[in-house]
Length: 76
Image (tube, rainbow, N blue to C red; front, side, top):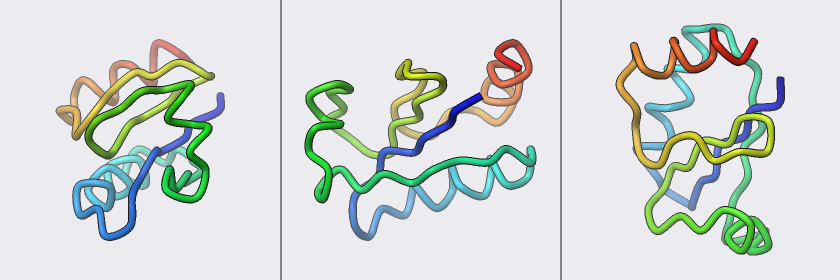
């Protein structure tokens, strides 16, 4: 499973999402969309964070913990 967090500099909500993924023990990659704007073309988010799982944008913003856990269990 490939998990990516689409983030921007100083994004406090992104830190919240990182902590949630750490709690579930999911490895992830952090993508700063200001440095890699090609990700915005592929995943047009207007607010950070965006959570991409296996090349599919699954969440924009902070999901509820239960929803995130359920989505990740279904994809594993």
